[in-house]
Image 1: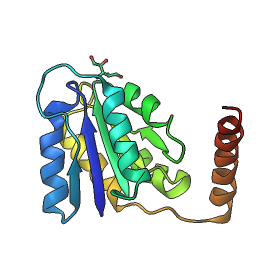
Image 2: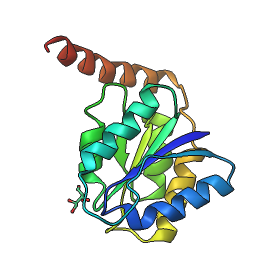
Image 3: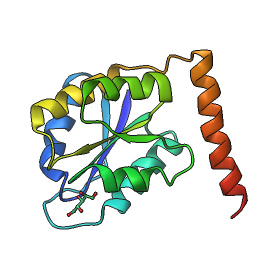
Image 4: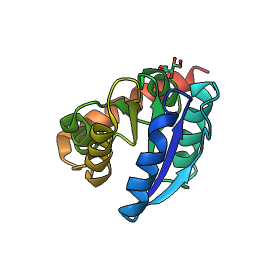
Length: 152
Ligand code: RB5
């Protein structure tokens, strides 16, 4: 799978381990930075990862910040991005299976590296179930997005 990953300075300490894990599992990783511990702004990385997905350069994304929250809020502003903060493995795969989540957000100041690795494994291995009830609910989510995009 082609996976875009981005982090601010809060998420940076975790990014290298996750890139290694994904590459060793055979995934193609698009590392969109940041590349140092110097302070940066998380919306810039949320935008880069979101755009990589919307342009087709990546199928899924992973965003890391201190809590996971800021990056998640920013990523969800892009129509077509469905991001979630998941710090438990059930949500990390169920978010894909039921909600077609395409970006996993993690808080590097909240969870340790071993849990982060398990969360990323659960996320990338999961597939949208396509069941009728989930399709129906997703269509309603997309309708909300379309309605408010139309007001711009
Ligand atoms: C940066 O200090 C921090 O605010 C950011 O990484 C993130 O936690 C925001 O949600």
